[in-house]
Amino acid sequence: MSVLAISITTVALAEIGDKTQLLSFLLASRYRKPFPIIAAIFFATIANHALAAWLGVVVADHLSPQVLKWVLVVSFLAMAAWVLIPDKLDEQESLSNRGPFMASFIAFFIAEIGDKTQIATSILGAQYADALMMVILGTTIGMLLANVPVVLIGKFSADRLPLDWIRRITAILFVALAVGSIAF
Image: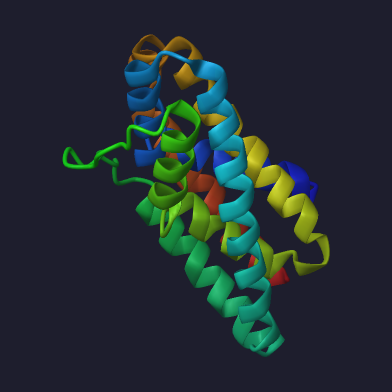
């Protein structure tokens, strides 16, 4: 599987039911202007995931290949366990009155810090340092695949998704990435 496909799949599945997906729904219901929200998600994700992937490369540069391999294996296994835990959006999270684009950009960028998908992006950046642009592009596409339908369709689509099964499939994907990293 290509780096692009792995990055898209990993983040798209990990994002289902995530707090940033819930934030997308909240933003869509508050502002009712999907295109500025989608643009903000796109730009916030590019900025956040570029930083996360670069950080993954920096960390990978300071570890021996053997240590890096086991850090990746443990990280993917930890992600597999983490995605099984449903996220809830913090009820006290506030949005600014700066308009749909700026409020969405700021809220989405901050909500993504330390999130499963950001950490997954760092791991992918460390593993595929030679294809960093594909990692950033893939994780951004994955984020958009998971969030754009929520913004466009709203609660209807989120209520219909089998989140438990999606979390399980995502966990299996991370376990497969961990097993694949052993051969790395």
